Image (cartoon, rainbow over all chains, first blue to last red; front, side, top):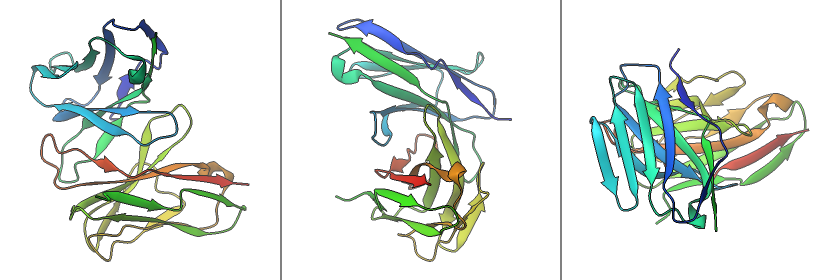
Length: 112
Length: 114
C-alpha cells in the first residue's frame, strides 16, 4: 500500500529559527513530491514541489529529496508566526492519473 | 481569477438525505479530483477525472458518485448520507500530470450529517 508518513507534531520553534519538517514515502515509483501549507479551516496551498534528488530553494523555503532513502524534507528559515500551520507532504505515484498520496500533516507552531 | 470554486461552503444534512457538492474550475484543467479530509487526517481521494466523460474511483469511493459532462464541472453526489460522511470535502484540479504539476484546491465544503 502506498503511504506517506509524517510526524503529526506539533513542532514548536521560536521566531527566527529554522523549522525542519520531514516526510517518508513507501512507493519507490513516486516521481514528484509536493509540500502544501494548510491554515486552520482553510484549503491546502502549494508551497513547493521537487522531483530531482538534492535541494531546491525558494525564498525562505528549501525542499530536500533523497530517493535512495525515500525521504523528503522542508526547511523553513527565519520562521515567522505567520508560518504556523499544518504542512502536508504529498507524493505523486505516477501513472496517467497524476494522483497524489497525502501524509496526515505536521502542525507547526512558531512562537514570537 | 476564480480558480476552483466549490458550493456550498457549509451544509448540514439529515441521515438518509442526498445532496450534490458542486465544483467548477475556469483554468481549462483536464484533471479534477475530489478529496475528503477528516480532523487530524490527510486528504483521501474519493474520485478523479482525467477529462470530460472519464471518471474513476480513488481510495474511498463508497457512498459517492461523480460525473464529468464538461471540462469545467465535476459534481460529487452523496446518496443516502451517513454520519461517517461528515467531513470537509475539497475539489482540486490540475492541467497535466507531469512532474511538478500541482493540484489547485477549492475552499472546501464543510458537511455535517446528523
